[in-house]
Amino acid sequence: MPARPQKISLGEMRSSGVRGLLIYCADYRCSHSSAISADRWPDDVRLSDLEARFACKACGKRGADVRPNFNWNARGPVGGMGYR
Image 1 (cartoon, rainbow, N blue to C red):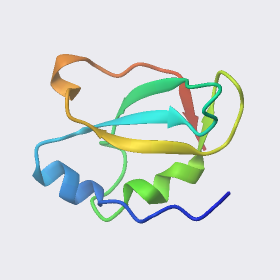
Image 2: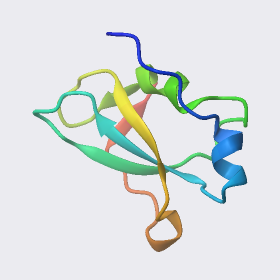
Image 3: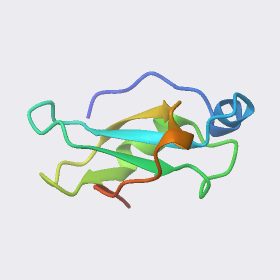
């Protein structure tokens, strides 16, 4: 998997009032996505640190694009990507 740029930490994200994550499958042909809570990880973890740990439940590909979910309060978590 190619090196990904370093993203913000969960602490920086939480300081902006964002507590959820959007997880997108790394395979553009699959385009499966999920919304999850970021509460299980400590503040010093970066979004880019989590990307290689996800596996898509739809196609099985490892790796993901992890982004802050700015609409977390409007919609709760939805299953779909497995964390390992």
